[in-house]
Amino acid sequence: MKTYKIASIPADGIGPEVIAAGHQALEALARRDGGFAFDVTEFDWSSERYKRTGALMPEDGTEQLKAFDAIFFGAVGAPDVPDHLTLWGLRLPICQGFDQYANVRPTRILPGISAPLEGVGPGDLDWVIVRENSEGEYSGVGGRAHKGMPEEVATEVSIFTRVGVERIMRYAFKLAQSRPRKFLTVVTKSNAQRHGMVMWDEIAMEVSKDFPDVEWDKMLVDAMTVRMVKDPKSLDTIVATNLHADILSDLAGALAGSLGVAPTANIDPERRFPSMFEPIHGSAFDITGKGIANPVATFWTASQMLEHLGESAAAQRLMRAVEKVCADGIMTPDVGGTAKTQDVTDAVCEAIRGENI
Ligand code: NAD
Ligand code: MN
Image (cartoon, rainbow, N blue to C red; front, side, top):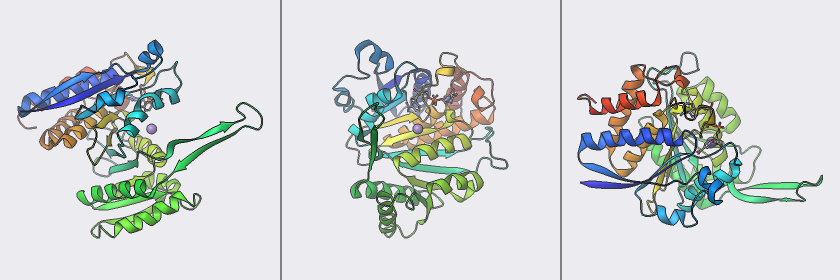
């Protein structure tokens, strides 16, 4: 039997609530399948740890994670710790330290979930957003001169490398090729940003030649937001920079019903290091401890994790179970239901144990 070593980092707010739900579903899948098991190690890396010790994770944190097959991450962020500290103290060191350069964000309207666009239901919106996850606008390069003075100047430099852009473009074309529609939209802002973004466009053209069976088009990011709302059916696979895709995927999550159902995978496609799987949402202080956090995003990212580990049948079974439970109306308040996190989790685990899933 194959045993997967999972590093679990629930972190802050509703992170521990949804990660606990995710582990229950993973256990139910392992028991049902019998062919694999999980060996889970939990890490207390969080804003609480920061307040206690001055660091969100130990100095050799990423070193410790190298021994694992995958990382299952909740959410980081606390009301009394600045957001840039929590982000740069935990999530980004892992993403960047492990060169998880492909951030993959599937979006679909699940059955039973009412999405905000009129006349757009399940089947009308089925996207995967591929976000460049290692450079671009979030390179961390820049600085502030004359801090606090009237003449203060701050720079936030976007770094785009040919290697970085080409590898994400190749990943996106390959992903588009694996999906039924074989259609990719490349998003830039090459009218206003005439260096890095123009290079994106050129590299897209070059890489496309290796994928003659993939149809593709280009969009400026501002016009893209309009197309996502007005013509969701026209899109399938989407590739964009770190910042652009960050924004577009929050919009995508909202168009699919709720951030509470939006998953993401931070992938090292070369498999040199463990990849990291997490819900897109943050720590949601407003609902922490109420037992109403939507666990669906976490189930979906658990399914992405299983797919990455090579357990495709279990990955698909988990999504069928989630879709059945949503269709049955067992949903948390953010998507119009009255169920608690645990009710949804119990229903998903029961569906996993069921005959027909
Ligand atoms: P958020 O995603 O935490 O919450 C936004 C809204 O969506 C809130 O009203 C929240 O209740 C709701 N929501 C989010 N997830 C939900 C779920 N699973 N079920 C039901 N409702 C859900 O975003 P925010 O309020 O902007 O940020 C809160 C904190 O989280 C901040 O510290 C921020 O930096 C951090 N954050 C972390 C991550 C991450 O760890 N990847 C991502 C985004 C934000
Ligand atoms: Mn974001």
